[in-house]
Image 1 (tube, rainbow, N blue to C red):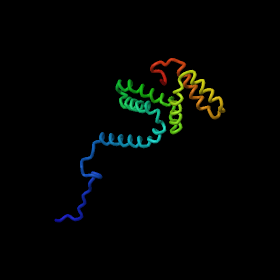
Image 2 (image 1 turned 30 degrees about the vertical axis):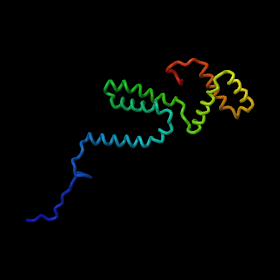
Image 3 (image 1 turned 180 degrees about the vertical axis):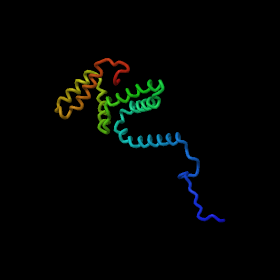
Image 4 (image 1 turned 135 degrees about the vertical axis):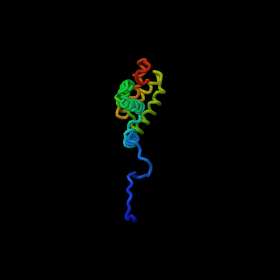
Length: 158
């Protein structure tokens, strides 16, 4: 007897190879989710350009601590990661081209180091209204405050 209309159904999916194990599928999904999260967070990362120096290690340590939460090493890694993440918003952020102009202005005004040079610059600024020179006066006041107190290594901006 001949068989008619013989149909063979395959359950292997898109490819004919062996199906990956459950752990491999879970790891693959986690990698895909992490990549999607990274691509989604990219615009936010551009907004915090200055703070990335604390955010990147903070995220790495926090994620490592969460993954290793049953291990004693996980607790030791989680706390510094959270501290870095929580301290990142306390740093002043960069505002793009305006901050670049201001930092260039700060570098130029840092050239006025002696008391006589500062006095001459102050006399020049007094000829103009405060509405025009407020940014210069603010930078000079910050520089005077920074040089008035001795710097302690490891504390704040140096």
